[in-house]
Every structure is written in C-alpha cells, then in structure tokens.
Length: 448
Image (tube, rainbow, N blue to C red; front, side, top):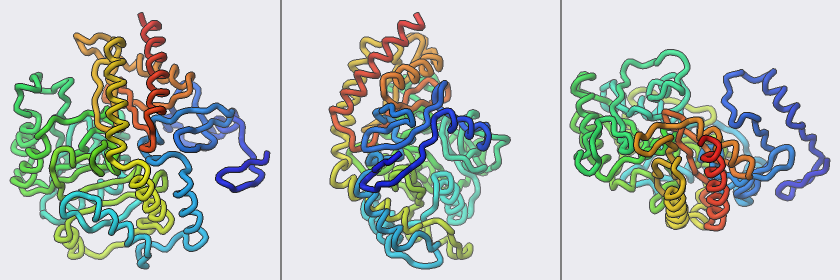
C-alpha cells in the first residue's frame, strides 16, 4: 500500500487488526491493560483525530493519557524532530547539548517563582523518584507524605507513593512513605461538609506526620489534581496549608505536574498556580514533549546544589536531543495556538456543557476539574453516591462506537476522564458533548 504521512511517501505494510492482537497475546506480557472489550489498534493520527487499522476515525479526547498535548503529528513538532534526527539523535548527559540547555532555560521562564534548575529524565515515574531522592538528600530526612487515591508511577518507589491497590504490583517497597486523606470533597473521607470543614483534610496531613513519622519529613508530594485518582480537585486554600505543614516539619513541598502541567488546567502554565502556591520542587512529563519520552524535575538552585555533595551523576537518555527538540517545539505551539488562556476559554465551555448535561443525566454524580482536565463521576444513585464502574465500562463502548475516545479512572473505576489535546476548539467540544450525551442516554436506558 502506498501511503503519505506529513509529506513522506513510501510503501508501508499495515498489519490487520487480528494479526496485531495475536502478536500482542503471543509476544507481550499478558498484564498489559487494554481499553475496550474489543481492543483498538491505532494506525495514525492527525491533530484531534486518530484512525485505527480498519480505517475508523475517532475524535481523541484523552490524548494518549494527557500526552499528545498539541495534537497528533503536529507539523511543527514533526518538522523540528525530523531535522534534529538528521543531525544528532543521541549523546547522553555527558556532553552538553544546545537543545538541552535551551529547554531548561525555557522551563525556568514559565514555571512559577524561583524554580530555575532542571534535571531531565524519561518518565513521570523517574521524575517523582528523583524528586523524592532530592528531598531526602537536601533535608537529611527520609519520610515522605503523599495522599490516598494518588498515583505516582510504575517503579517500585513510585508504586509505594501510589495509594490505589489497582496500580500496585506486588508489595509496597518503601516504609518511608505515609498516606494522608485526600481532598475528595464529593466523598469527604472525614464525613464533613466542605463549606464547614475548614479544610480539615489538610490538617490530616499534619496528624499523619505527628502520629506515623518521626516528626521530621523529607517532603510532601501531591498532584494539584489527582489524575488517575479521578481528577479530584482540592478546594481553595488547601495547598497553602500543605506547604506550611511541609516546611514546619522540615520538608519540601513537591508538586507532581505530570498530568496538570503545560497549561492543561487553563489560566496558568502549571496546575499548582491556581492555588497561588510556589512549590519547592516540581515534576513534569507526559505533555512536555507531545509524546516523545521526556520528564523533568525543576527546583531552586540551592536545593539542586545539595545533590552535588551526594555525588555526580549521569542520565543515558535524559535531555535527549530529539526529545528536547520535541519539547521546545511543543511549547512554541502551545504559546501560539493553545496557550493557558485559550485552554481556560475552551475548558470553561466544556465545563458548562457538562454541567448542562448533568441536569438531565442522573448517572452524572459530579463534574469536576479545571481547564481541559474535566472528570465525570458516575453514580448509580445521586443520593447515596453509590459508584458504578459498570456504567463507565458501558459508556466507553458506546462512545467508541460513535467515534469518541475518552479515559477513565478513580479508585472505584467510575470516573470518566476528559482531557483532549489543548488545541481543541469549541467545535470539537460540541462534537464530543453530543456523542457523550447520546452515549450516556443509551447507557442509562440499558441499566434501567
């Protein structure tokens, strides 16, 4: 078959769906999680859309788990990466590279406060693990506080930080990690009303420090909005309390921006800025390079300098010339086509549409999130708030059948995660809302 993608023409053999799935079963570990009862092998993408190997077209409102942040195969990213691959593909951090330092400089410009100096890695898991090590070295303390329902990655330490049994493989690794209640106002773990609680869940973080640690911690590590946890969004004032608690107990405040970074939440470049708080350390990955493997830990110079005393280090793939090129091009596209104010505008439009839909769809217990990071918690009954994972599974199948890709999450598997590429327009939102509404009605009728 003669195919042309982004101006590149050539003969490409495309496996049929059955062959791909057979090889998946034969040559890949059986623990791979695959969406849909009938798995969906994708073939190519363009902007807001992807196509499967059978030629079916889908509007992508999950963006490769919040990763293809400027859409699939954006021409500028493709062009810049192609140029770099013809120049230098790999070098390692042993050798300074122009794109490596340019990206570090750019991130120092767009991150909040005095965050200035970066260490690049390959994934969010590595970034969170490196941030924990940094905090331990800098403070001289070991213990880490994070939140229930949180997700930090797939390494052993990251799975210890994670507080969902679904995403832990084998036993937890680190006895230094302690989990406090999260700010889950819809299902308050303290059984309190948000308007009357005085952010009691934040106080629980200090209670955990006082009762489950030595009283001296290395850090508190929290996602501004819990991603895999179901887009759980803390109330105003929450993070100011958290940062104060961290500092009073000798620790740093680490903001995990793997899913909330690069304008995803609208208005600002990073999620934590909605709460008016400057973290001591920030981790980021996913959307940083629009799908190329890259992650970063950024912090203040005096904190980063503590690692020098612990010994010099290298990263084979961190700061890779191709990935950093992709990141620089991605940020340029965001600035010109999908800056945080664009995301706020389209995100507000999406939120309004979801809240209007909620009025007639009894399955929708709560709509929450910020910007183009919106979650829908599905419930069997709004009064009891009984979670319904079955409805989420059915909704997945119905939206796929209508040409829309979405995500899901939450401890109970009942939260729909809507997070399209940030280049999404109101027209894209209208299409997605219509499909989602029709699918929701079909599911509601099926379970009655």
